[in-house]
Each structure stands twice: as structure tokens, then as C-alpha cells.
Length: 314
Image (cartoon, rainbow, N blue to C red; front, top):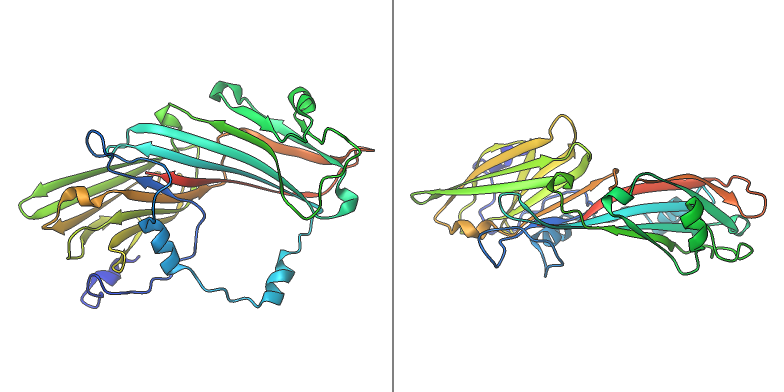
């Protein structure tokens, strides 16, 4: 646990303390909306606390350039990446305001002898979610619509080698709150000069979340007193924020909460709350059944990676 750092030896608030943390790939935020009441909203922000925290805690590169280059040589002749990025807006009680998921499949061919190929995708029921697919202009759209196969319009033409090509995109904007991978609610209550902050997360059973990081701005000059925390926390005193982390959220901890106390502050100062996570589960039901050559339909070895990353979640 990280509670030990809050004792007498903790750095004074506002001083620089170097905190080490591996970088993750996603971000998600909760904002006080400019309209009615408190809220979280998603969208590209100016320099965010989360970004600053990640810059401050990035690990230096240890590998020599030669070793790094050796690591990057792909074993399989074809690499396929499926990524979804989620943006989401919620109010401070977790109510959904807006959610947008953008998906992308990229294909990279590493050897010329494996460049005349087709990708056989497996699609589940995506129409009920209102998912619409868009194929790259060079991809045979009719072939994809008919048989879920991704191939170039001219089957004799090879895919370019050594550069990733976005072959398929999709997008969905669910209105259903039950489809949110994560809901966060935050309840500040004032008692005299103290502000008690209860913040809770609730994760969907459909998504196991990796490296869940919740960054809460800390207004005022005195550090928060953390009374309880499910997971780890650390105080980033240079950026004046409290960072709440769970390496993995699965069936053992779908719900979690944290309580801390602030003195002599405006309770609105704890927004925007920013969140980041990744997941290997996707919204779109899409997979790869195989990759075959155009000429003889012989199987081609490929590596596949699927990942959902939060872009902005507020």
C-alpha cells in the first residue's frame, strides 16, 4: 500500500517529490460542467494534471538504441492492431452526459512475400449497438459487406510493407448508461472548515480495467488527510493532486471508494477529476479468423492485438 508515505516524513505540500510510475496508454476525466451543477465532461483539454503527472513520472529509457532496434523486429509477417478509444462525459454523481467510441483496425505487412493477402474478420452482433463500419478507400467494400473479408480492390496489388495502414474504422455513441466501462461519483460535504470528499468508482462487468488511475486536484495549501482507500494512492505535491491507482479492476474489486478530508477549501476545487485506464475487451464484436494469400488462400501467420483505451473520461 502507499498509505505509509503520508506520515511525518512526507514532503511539504507544494515541494517537488519524484514519484515513479510506469506509463499507461489512456486517459479519462471528470469535470465540473460550466452549465448547471457539477459534472464531468469529455473532450480534448489544455495541459491536464494527468498529462503532467505522467510526464513527471515517466521512466527514463534504459535500452541502448541497438538493443531497442533488435526488440522491434516482428516475428510474424503480418501485424494487426485493433484499438478503440473512448471519450465520455459524466456529471459528478456519475450520470452519463455523452459517450463516444472510435475504433480502428490497422494492418502492417513486414515481408513482401506476404503482401498479397486478405484478412478474414469475425463480426458479432454489432448492428444492435448501431455500429457503422467504414473501409479504407483502397479496400473492397462490397467484399467486406458480403463476407467480412478485408482485401484490396485489386487482388493482384500488394499491401505496402513496413507501414501500418488503417483498413477499417467504426464508431458508436451509446446513450445507455449501463454500457459505460466505468462510472465515478464524487460527493464533497462541508462540515465547519473541513470538506469531506467521498469518491467512488463502479466498473462494468463487461470490462476488466488495467492501470486505473484517478487524478483529483487538491485545492488549498494543506495536504489531504486520507481516511480510507481501496487500492493505492500517492500525493503528487508538485502538481497538487491526489493520484488513486488500481493496477487491475476485475471481479474482485468492481466497486471501490476513497475518502479524504481537506481544510479551508472551496469544494468545487476538486474538479476536473481525470481518469485513465485500458482494457483488452472491446465494444465492437470483432475478431480475426485468419489471414490468407489472395492467390491460393494459403494461411499467413499474423500477430493480433486488441485494446480499449480511454481518451478523455471526465
